[in-house]
Amino acid sequence: MTRGVESPILVVSDVEAVYADVILALRGVSLEVREGEVVALLGGNGAGKTTLLRAVSGLLRVHGGQIRRGSVTFVGQDALKLGPVKTVQAGMAQVMEGRRIFAELTVDENLRSGAFTRHDKQAVAADYERVLALFPRLAERRRSAAGYLSGGEQQMVAIGRALMAAPKLLLLDEPSLGLAPRVVEQIRDIIVTINGTGTSVLLVEQNATMALSISQRGYVLENGSMVKTGSGAELLADSDIQEFYLGAGETGRASFRGLKDRYRAARSASAS
Amino acid sequence: MVLAGVGVVLLAILVFLAFDGPQKFFTLFAAGIALGAVYALVCLGFVVIYRATGIVNFAQVGMVVFGAFVTYNAVYTWGWNFWLSMLFSAAVLAVIGIGFERFALRRMTGKPIFSIILLTIGLYLLLQSLIGAIWTNAKDTIPNPWIGKTVSLGSVNILQVDVVTMVLGAAVLASFFALFRYTKVGLGMRATAIDQEAALAQGISVPGIVALSWAIAGAVAVIAGTMLGSGATPKVGLGLGISAVALQALPAMVIGGLDSPIGAVIGGLVIGVAYEMAVGYQTQYIPSLGTSGFADVLPYLLMVLVLLIRPSGLFGTRDVQRV
Image (cartoon, rainbow over all chains, first blue to last red; front, side, top):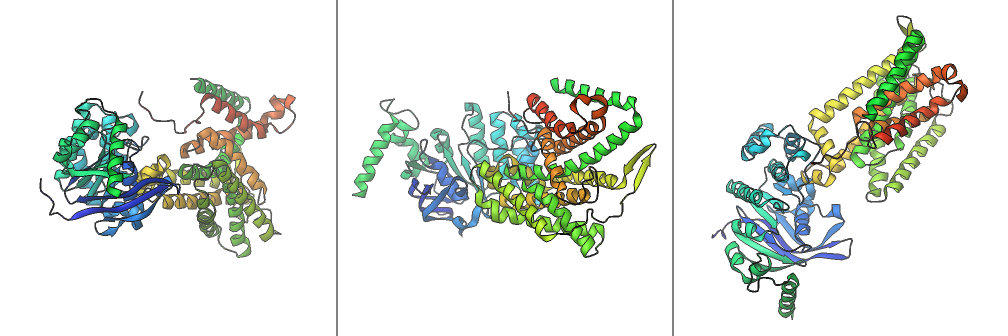
């Protein structure tokens, strides 16, 4: 797909992030999401994917983290100065890892909480109907406490809640986590539908097959650094990706450590 | 099940007492409900802060007493109308509450919960000493329209000031319910109580919600303090005795469940009625315990009982989980 002409909606440039002043979680990471794109962000546990999302959405400080260098620009504004509330108002919504729905509130209340920053009641009501149309299952369970829903339904609540903010950019942190393969397919189709209405998506995933199958471009983050980037198709075809994320390498059971070593070697080679 | 059993036993005791001597019983019962209304108001202040921040805020006790004195100052020294004075006092205490949060507690974010609670005790003592310094020669009641007046229901006499307290308590509870259930801010408060970070991610201003909670706690404290200072049951009048009553509201909060406004009210009423019954019947039915004092222990006994059966209190949030 050639969408390169679209203007960028999110530009992350050379961001370095630390936790508790000492733990370096991002070592100069750059990434770009253009209007209308689905961009996949891949990487193993502890690679820094969630940290990058927090840096973008302004939630890093909640975790005692801090950006030491670099910039994040969202729709032309300096996202590092916006803070979480204005970031949402500017059009960025986040589905956090582990769903983080309000378990004791009803599905209806969860969805409405997503529109907290909006004041146009008619537009919110229209979006509410749209979300229920997208997730018919939630319409049936509107009055039940969200915590009683199945894992897949809870993920739908989390995504629906984010959509209620009418986002230009949707950040999704591992939406497939802990879900059955069939539900993962549903979630994937929903992401495609959402993207079809013009919302850009930054998709963090460990399920690389799912993520790359619907992404125009992808990035691979390891140990706080970007080690690979390319179109979705390129990454899907990439032998390293196949070997270490899709489990279909030549040897069939190469270790994850091996991948890291190889990237490390590549980095030091390019640095010197 | 066990809880229902305990409830039935307590109710049976009440029914027995009611038939034994209706006039004495209903006089005590009315006083108990009035006292319960005061406890409920104090508890609502505790609960609203607990929900927003997860701390038991002892400064609430100080705000109740301080609120009483600010109202007194407006009514007696400045000669204002009673209701206007109470409104003014509510505004002052709301500002003090926000100030406490902004300049003392916000700095403690992320510190051990124990340190934070100690800080709130410090704020309570600060308010208490301020009262001693500012109002050296205060009268023993806030001048009010109901002094010495009673209403009669059959043969039972109830202090008018107690009736006002009950009405105010009911009105505050209704407003709380409406705020939490039907307003957007209320939704934000509930979401914040469940998961602060997730609330932030929805664009809910968590610092704003916390500040609002402190303002509400301050305003509610004023109502409780003013009514106690006006001679409502247990008739401590204007003085530091008010803080003793406010502290007794703690078992009510624990019984109700720390984070439930309705629990605060039910817990308050239970403790209020139990207290007055113990005061009224101790010499008659349990003379072995002496002539007085059992009433002060009973709320804590009930608290232990409830906690044994249901650790999260009667209405406290238990985790919503699929099984």
